[in-house]
Image (cartoon, rainbow, N blue to C red; front, side):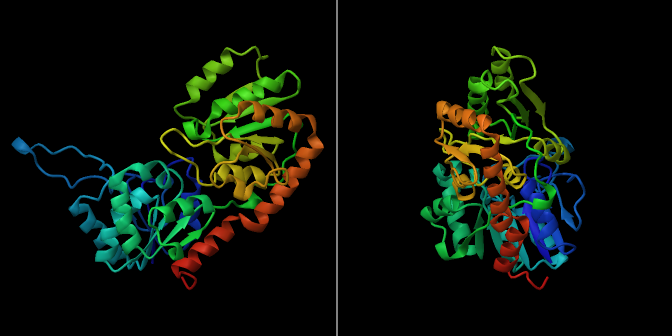
Amino acid sequence: MFALAARSFNQASETFIRQHARGIAPGNTAFVTYDATPEPPLDGPVLADLGRRPRRLGAGGSEMSRTTLPVGLLHAGRTRHAARFFRDTGTEVAMGEFGVFACKLLDAARRSDVRYFVHFHGWDASRVLSDPKVLRLYDDLWARAQGFFAPSRFIADKLIAVGCPADRIAVTPCGVDPDAFPMSARVPGRCIMVGRMVDKKAPLVSIRAFARVADKHPDARLDVIGDGPRLAECKAEVAGMDLPEGRILFHGVQPHDTVRRMMSEASIFLQHSVTTPDGNTEGLPVSVLEAMSAGLCVVSTRHSGIPEAVIDSESGLLVDEHDTEAMAQVLDHALADPAMCAGLGDAAAARVRASFTIDHAIETLRDRMGLTGL
């Protein structure tokens, strides 16, 4: 039995975790999570609500409140509970998603003789590396876990720099199902953004770049899909722009089917990923790979693992981080030349199929964890 451990299986933006849940060991996977009720239900045994402290009676017999543990190890009782779950399900190999959460299961894996692997993704290999407490926890991971995965060479190198053994880490971009994102009709002028409205995606930069050139391209339209702490700020900025109504539309969080449908009409994908002041970075955004798979012209930044997938002027267009003017110029060029966009999109789709599919990722994970016979 294989076990997959993640803080949550319910996050709409973490499609890669659900890919791993479905694809690594179908029908032979147990799940460990902080979620009280994973939705949709997972196909296998589930240890849920892991972050809860064991309930006990307080003064006067009242029950103590549930709490979710901060960065650090699990409460000893929950560690014993997780170890028992591993033993009861016959788990031999487990993988923790995100380094900070994965630290919590290390002792449970050791107690139950489980071979333990850790998949890093982005913030867990960037922003938190300035925290001495996290680095001490990671030192324990490097010493005791059997192997590690990173979504890009950029992230792998950051982990190696803080002690991860170079011979035990593999680069495994999360990958996409190319058949789920057929080639777009590439309606000229149709642009799209997909992702959380957070600092490391700098949504205002993309919106401002579009607004700077929109007057030159009357048919240009930008659809923005996603929610997050920067959404209100983005909406307020657009409300103050001198743009005709409907040129920039906010759709909020949408189901994956809706994202696919809207990508199937777009011609240009915008994402201005940046390193935030506290050091937070992307890994290799799945949304970028999905857009490439659909044959969109990706306009993005030289950030983290993005240049490992998007080759500038070959399979997309890249600018430096925080350079609004450069992004506006590149977008202007792309909007003015649909044939160039189509050519870059064709090359992007071919690149995804050659190197960035979910099948590639799953094969690497299974091989490195010794699950080929499961």
